[in-house]
Amino acid sequence: MNAEKRRNIFERLREANPHPTTELNFNSPFELLIAVMLSAQATDKSVNKATKALFQAANTPEAMLKLGEDGVKRHIRTIGLFNTKAKNIIKTCQLLVDRHAGQVPRTREELEALPGVGRKTANVVLNTAFGEPTMAVDTHIFRVANRTRLAPGGTPLAVEKRLLKVIPKAFLRDAHHWLILLGRYTCTARKPRCRSCLIEDLCEYPRKTTE
Image (cartoon, rainbow, N blue to C red):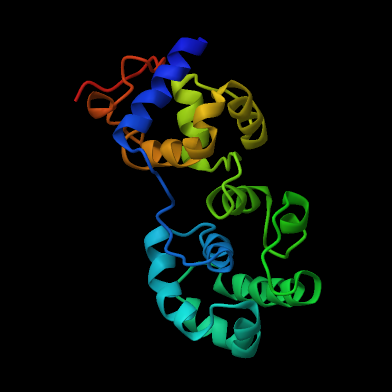
């Protein structure tokens, strides 16, 4: 895909949604960190349902530690892998208190040192909480990047590096959210809704749907 096409894609996405953001509910970097940790193999809707009560009970690392692992479990047991996630949340909160004065760190290395926080989670926090031009490649972005030929790659990391290289700088901060939303609601896994897609004529996917 050439540079002009790529720019046109993001110009259209920006025009349709000038201020995209995550569908996870949060009011602080800490709440976002916890919500993203919970979202692994879970829907944003299910996470929001669980965190509504969780964050009312504890919305700081200190308060989460007082709630304890069992207390966290009670709030998140409707989410997959809740036992492991509760354990990681408590360990992460302890490190935030011990190493970062209760604040969410602003570097990838420090974020990835937290239990249950991988590269994708770190990228989401850096981008959404702190405005960094990062690219968290989930299944939606991986699919969209390869289907459209915007940034084809065999692994999430390869796609991430390619996207960061080819997306015009003016669009990098919001590109993560635009591509996720495109994959979640239009360029869906089983049957993409090509006829209702904003970028159908720019997309290089060879098997477009006609319905």
